[in-house]
Each structure stands twice: as C-alpha cells, then as structure tokens.
Image (cartoon, rainbow over all chains, first blue to last red; front, side, top):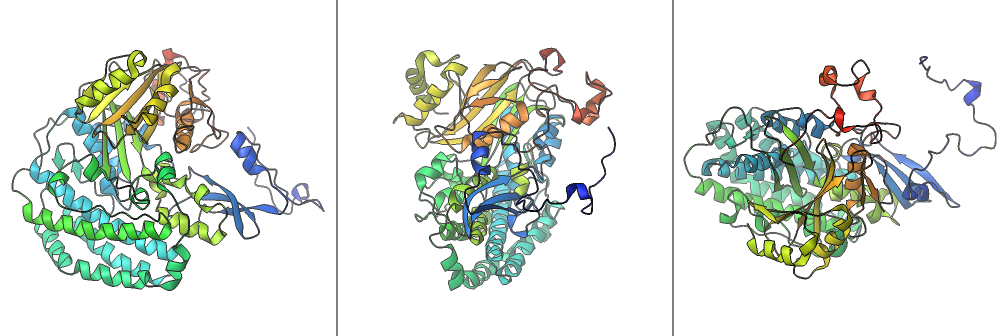
Length: 403
Length: 183
C-alpha cells in the first residue's frame, strides 16, 4: 500500500467549496440509534468534547448535539485507553493476571485487584487467614477514602473551583504515602495475593496511619467547609441530572450512584465478604438522586470508612497473612464470580478455569463503564456546562471504562 | 449457599433448564437454551418471588467450540449471585436476543460482547463497535485471535497478527487452539 501523505491545508483539493456548511463527510450510520443521532434538525449542530478534555477524568471523547446552549443528545466515544486487559489476562498466569488488573482504575486500584483475587480464591477453594482479611478491609477502606476525597476535589474542579482539589490532595497524599510504605508502590499497589496479602503491616505504615487517624475526621470536615457551604456549588448541582430508583436499577447502576436514589444496596451488607459482617457501619443513602445527592453520599461514606478503620485497628488478630498454597496456581476446571463494593460500585470478576495455570476466560466488570451510559439520558435538555457537573458526579474513571 | 433459591428456580423454570441448578459458595448457576433466554430473563426479573432486578454483568465466552452469553443477576430476596449461562451459540454466526428490553443498561455490555466476540444481539438499537475502531475487522477475545507473542502458533503466521481479518464467518473451530473441558 502506498504511503499516505498527510494532507496540507494549502492543498486545493481539500479546500472548502464556497457555500458549503460542513466540509467533513459525516460518518455512515451503522445502527438505528446512530442514524437518529447523526440526523440534525434545524438549528442543531455537533460539538466535540475531548478526547483530551481535562474534565473527563481520562481520555474520553463525547460528541454533543446542541441546539444553542442546550444539549439535545450525546454520544460518548470510548476506546482511547483500551489495553485489552481481558485478553492479556488469558495469556498470563493467575499471579500475573492480578498485576494487569491494577491499572484499571488507578485511583482505587486495591479494589480492582480484590475482585479477581476473590474469584481466584473461590476457584482454588482457599480460606484467607483472619489477619489478612482484616488487613484487606483496612487497606480497602483507606483506598476508598483516598478515592472519595479525590472525587470531592475533581467535582469542584469540573465546576470551576480550583482550590478544593489542592486540599483534597493533602488527604490523598497522606494515604498514598501510607500505602506506599506498606506495599512499596504509590499507585498500583499489587498487594493482594491469592490466599492473603503480600507482607504484614510494618512500623512505618502503622505510625503514619496513627498520625493521620488522630486528625483525619477534623481535616476532612474542614475540607468539606470549602464546598458544602459554597452557594455556587450547591445551586449548580441541586436538582441537576435527577436519577430515580427504578431507572437506576434498570440501567444497572451500583454503588453510591444507586444509593443516592434511595436503594440501600451495598455488597458489604448484601453479599458479605471478608470480615465486613462483624463490623459496625451504616450505609448512607439519599433520596433526591441528583448530582448533589451523589456528592453527599460519598462524603458520608468517608465518615463510615473512618469508623470501620477504627474498629479494624482495635480488633485485628495476630497470625499469618498468607494461606498455604502451591507456588503454581492451577485450579480445577470451574467458574467463579468474585465481587467487591468499590468506591464507584460493584467491581466483579468472572473467571473460568480449564485446569491450566492460566485463566481460560477472565471477564472484568467495571462500574464506571455502566455509569457512563447515564451521561446521555441525564444531560439531555440541560446546558452544555451541566454535562460536566453530571459527569463529574457520576465519577467515572476512564481507565476502568476502557479496560 | 441459598438452597431455597435452587428449589424455587427449579419449580419456576421447570423444563427450560438444560441442567439441574448448580450451587457453589455464594453462586447459583443455571443454563437455558437460546430460544428460552429472553423468556427466562423476563421471569427472573418480573416474578415477585424471584425479583432479580439487577443485571450486574453480561459477557460473552468463547469456549473454542461454541459461544456462550453469561448473565450475572442479583436480587434483594437472595444472598446468592445468580449466573445464567446461555450455551450453544453457533461460533460462525452467534446470535441471541438482546436483554435491553428488560435492562436498558445492558446496551453497552452487549456492544462490548459484539466488539470482542462478534455476537449479534437482536433488538439492541446501537450494536456497533465500542472499543475498537469502526473499520476493525477482527474480534479480539475469540480463541483464534492470537497475541503478537503467539504469532508463531498462529495459522496465519507471517501476517501481522493484529491486522489479520477475522469475522465469525471466516473462523473455523479447527483454528481454535485452546479448548475447555469444564465450561
């Protein structure tokens, strides 16, 4: 095939003929829905957002059909971050597969590894030692707080406030440093192993955790003062992108986005795993289902996480942190589904074993992928600027969406 | 393990079940044929005693001999995950009815299964590629699609592997390298 040269704007062949309104041929519609989207009524036009837009939490492109300042319809275009993690996992052994799942959601990577680990443990029929279960709960709740505080800053940033993101990074950095002292990594921890965790709690982690715990609640409250009492923020998010419980269930929504509509569905309560049944915590819900409710539910969850960490630190038993397992993981043929409640919803992994040391099929379910579908229905009829407010409140992370 | 759910499913679904209900840890597994798939999902969703209101996951599986579509459902009435496996999709032209009439949120998950396996979901209004570019011709998660590392094992060795054309129509079961016994 001859090498194609990049067309120059000076090339007369591509000059825009006088009187033409749109010089790029529209893509041929492949489906009914796309044909409907590509048909422009009088006064409507397309605007492209992304794929480098700073408020899309990753590399997302959204084609928005607008009428004046109003969003008529929109079509998210995914795949800019697609790495084929499921295929890579099928070609890796069980331990390697866990590393591949880490970078999916880089802000809450412990949950991304917890789901496959849970599935593999079911395949191997192994019991995790009690101490390892407590350590997992402790680290996961820390990661949930880090993720939610970052969300808090992001949400304000997407609405045009620069200060809160700097404040929320204070909290996040403390937790990241703490987990780095424990796992040796700042972002992609790769800490959970099939049958336990990689290494017991160390002195540096514990001392950092103690210092942080002594002032965490007060610090988070003072961060909240920046946003919760901000009239601009509240007015822009209240009543925007309202989701009702019935639609949420039909759309497959989970996590805080579902709880903000009044459905108290939380895997920690409904499908108990690890030591959660023994811990005391509430499941915060709201009934409004708007962007503000989605934000406030997450804030309440931070407080519950601190409560869980407090109990875990008091009740953690001594003992081994790894179960006895062969080096080479070779489960019997079978299927298993492992799921955990992450900061965005249900992280699930469906693993099929064919008796070899590599998973035959490994399906990774990410809540952000499902939630991104809602951006269209929730923003229709609103202003363009509100697209950002809705999208930020759904809190998708593109690393997980694109897998 | 929720044994009440197993008996309930057996009575509600009856003849539609291809195999008896299987349970392991907190998972309940049932299998129905393609013809009964939508009907079964409808019963699971609507029946007041079952109430599987949440579709947690939908995915395709290529066993090397056939395609399967797997649904994971969750109900507030049971503490088990329900796994519905629809086996026996023809590998060269996999087709199944869409679940979007019950769960509109299944749309993107079906698009993903189409993108990765070529499974056609009849009734999905927006069935096009979601991750791969529109002009891409292969279906990457099929077992006859090899990663670059495995090019020497590929029947199309010598062709740049990622660009090798592949549609469900071209693919033959003989090209599948790994087969499963359990799935």
